[in-house]
Amino acid sequence: MQPADLLIDNLASLATVDANGKFCVVHNAAIAICAGHIEAVGPRDQVHAAVTLAADAEVIDATGQSAVPGLVDCHTHVVYGGKRIHEFDLRAQGASYERIAAEGGGIKASVRLTREATEDDLVASATKRLKTMRRLGTTTVEIKSGYGLSAEHELRMLRVAKVAGKQADLRVLTTCLALHSTPPEAESPDAYVDYAIAEILPACAEFADAADVFLERGVFGVDQSRRFLLAAREHGLRLRLHADQFSELGAIPLAIELGATSVDHLEATGPEGIEQLAASNVIAVGLPVAALTLKCPMPPLRALIDAGARVALATDANPGSAPCLSLPTTMHLACSQLGLSCAEALQAATAGGAAVLGLDDEAGRLAVGFKADVVLIDNPDWRALIAQLGAEPARVIRA
Ligand code: NIG
Ligand code: FE
Image (cartoon, rainbow, N blue to C red):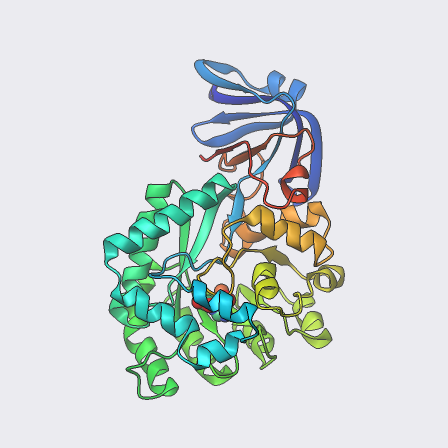
């Protein structure tokens, strides 16, 4: 064992999913880190007995503080041009998200503004958002394209996501959301799906980890989604779906049929969908900020967990339906509105998110061999990060 180069000592408590997948809280704890990986973690006397410290090691005295794993935000749209603040005000006065979209606002407005923006502007605005997320405890983030809707502009969004991640010192995974909306120049949604398969996927596959579709009434249907996702699978991408946000159109059966990694949203999912998900390996991703902002029913994460489904939580950060960069706020909503315990919410926003991103063995846990991503909380009780609405960590360490 190498000597540790960083020791986080005297933690009042530490909460994490452990190496065996079990949620645990350790009191009077320590974390020893070497070259960005966790070398020992647990009760401080055991950690001290297990490791030696390098002569120039940094020691953080975390007396009175607690620690949780770096948060994993597995669903965001933080690369975009322009703003849609007036839509928030319109919705406050009674307009619906779907009506604003039908009148050329919503995703279509962001497509126009993103295409118009320079690459430098996109990098600068995304970097600023990612730095805020990092300050709020997120150390790994998934970023979707979906406001480009051409091979050139989708690719540009994925490139911007990677550059912004480097500048903000965050681990970024990318998803090609070419089927987010039909662009104005397309003859029809079907013609656009053909184009996305023939041109966008081949151009983007190398720069994306996953592919995603917005399967929803008035957007894309089951057959169009199936065609695109099957093609994406051929390119080696993991599959995800924006599913059941406003209507149940069969997104869950399709996700199961295709072996998708996740279905995200689920505000409209009924008992049958819950049962189907619970019997599958597909991860249910709750996005409570979007439900709150659009006054939709909250996603049934409580029922999904009780039925045995795998779940995760994410911000869905975007300029329209979810103007929120904070996973602590998202976890707070999961507890106060969805009926999750703090332990369930933390698990969903750490190990749960990591599972969605295929990082189960690297991120989202304070366990030996995992990346040393640690959120320090200025409170002996780690639940303070969730209980206080809008809480900010004391310090965020990323491997
Ligand atoms: O996850 N529902 C579709 N896509 C995004 C919204 C994007 C937007 O409003 O710009 C979502 O909520
Ligand atoms: Fe989304």
